Length: 103
Image 1 (cartoon, one colour):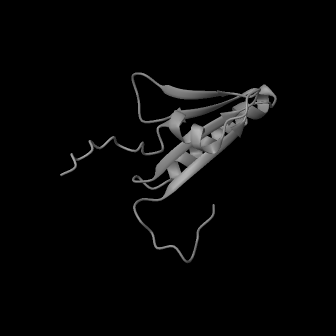
Image 2 (tube, rainbow, N blue to C red):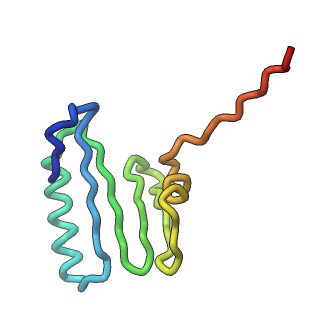
């Protein structure tokens, strides 16, 4: 857990869980149990992110009950930070504004 003392709180707290999936199945089972316990201790308004990595990186969206969603980034490819933001829908695309006719 990390908190910046000089930045005022804006909105609910956010937690990001990163999981290395290149572990033994017993360790992953223990980790799953620990993650469930941690999730139950978080405040109700807390924003939660979940990223798994091994051969590929998967960014999981937890807000969908009926249709889980994950973004997969291949491990053998390099992605510029801006492109990752685009792929995850985390950047605002510049909106095309029509040009005003000149007088």
